[in-house]
Image (cartoon, rainbow, N blue to C red; front, side):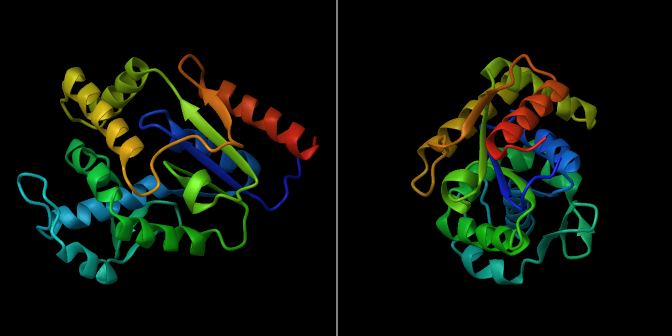
Length: 227
């Protein structure tokens, strides 16, 4: 199947499986996969390690000036790195999850991340997932998907992910964090989470990754008239 050199934008709420699905789709199409959420998590980890977030979750204004020294990027395997250090495990922790939404709501943080995404996607043939890829970062993306799933399903997915990584979360804490992130993401002043008018909606509450991939390929074939 020959797909043009397009940008595929995948948006949606937290724990809808956007990243896993985007990786599968990118692999199927031989596209480059970019995880925008990982970059926001990387900024959050940086702010935590530099002591720029107080105990009451207040974010220091110093973060704006410190971003210029943050070498945040993906390595050759698509892993998130700060300098020479792979931080994939650290950025997926509950500690980072609890503070990533306030960090990502900051306009200057979004500008920092957007600049990196635009550089990575300069030649197309990329799949990106996040909260505002199709509405703000790449509003002209040729193919957009907005992913949804029920709160209960999303909370269970996130709980299982944390347990598999050796953490010991409480399902009620995971659900509360998910609801808080949904509220912050959809009510932030800068580029709130919403479905783009031209995005195809995918409710994957009861779908396997294989079924999601088959759905996406079918929509792509119809949209671009390819086999």
